[in-house]
Length: 351
Ligand code: NAD
Image 1 (spheres, protein in one colour):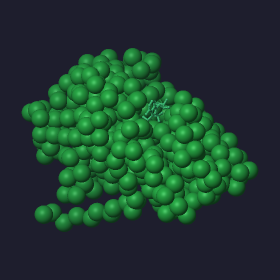
Image 2 (tube, protein in one colour):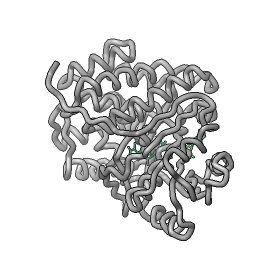
Image 3 (cartoon, helix red, strand yellow):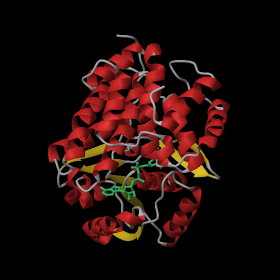
């Protein structure tokens, strides 16, 4: 075994079906009261139900979470936190809602209990991505890491099939990049390969039967494993491109990941043969990149940046922003390489 360093993130995880009934007990374990329940506007009804389950512990609902955690939204939420003298945060939703919770916790150190309803995996990391003036920056801080996660498979049954597939590919991107990360290690590789296999098994089933509980359970478990990988290993070119593109053009975060992943896998495969082999094996195929292209098609995820709404004229901007502060990557890349990758992804054609 090659010598390694592994730091696990100390969060409590409750996983199962019907676990939302335990939310009051979990909040008590964290000593939380005067809880603010967070959600996106579309998930208000669910936030209300969770506030109901929290009973006297809940003080209000803030349902304005938005993608890419705009600092303007955080500033407004902080006014509510101060005026209600909030003592804890419960986030119910996808990565956008978790992002708002983390942004508040970063500034207040309030405890967080996250109830994920997509496969983004943000709940398992101490990373906060925020957007200001079209630029997304990320930071890592112990205050950002949620204290507890409550996974309830039942809350994912209504996640529409197209969002499920796209969100699942977002999760898989964390595991893929962890497998070739400069600080990767055997523990992370175990989590990554199990996460990828669970996702690859589950997503095609969810695409045809969104209420398949077994597949939903696999996908949510896979999302957690992939999220732990994201929190434990340094991400490469794929995540850099997604941050740049997502922040610059306000495209769907998960959609951008789904489009870019096979292209970066194709670019990196020869420089990271062991990782590529693990990915291919998890996908039960022989080529990691082709396996990912095929999975994208099977789950009807977006195939091009063009269909997500990015202008072709923006490719040069993406190249410039990527090259201005590149992430470490198993294969060194030039501006021309990045241009070719983004152009192929924009067109939705394998490079
Ligand atoms: P999202 O949270 O924006 O959710 C997508 C849409 O699905 C929203 O409209 C939401 O209301 C809806 N939705 C969520 N759960 C649903 C359900 N069960 N049924 C029906 N609709 C549902 O999208 P996302 O892809 O989960 O998260 C993206 C955000 O997460 C981005 O801002 C990204 O930067 C962040 N993220 C951060 C990290 C990290 O570690 N910091 C990791 C991954 C993602």
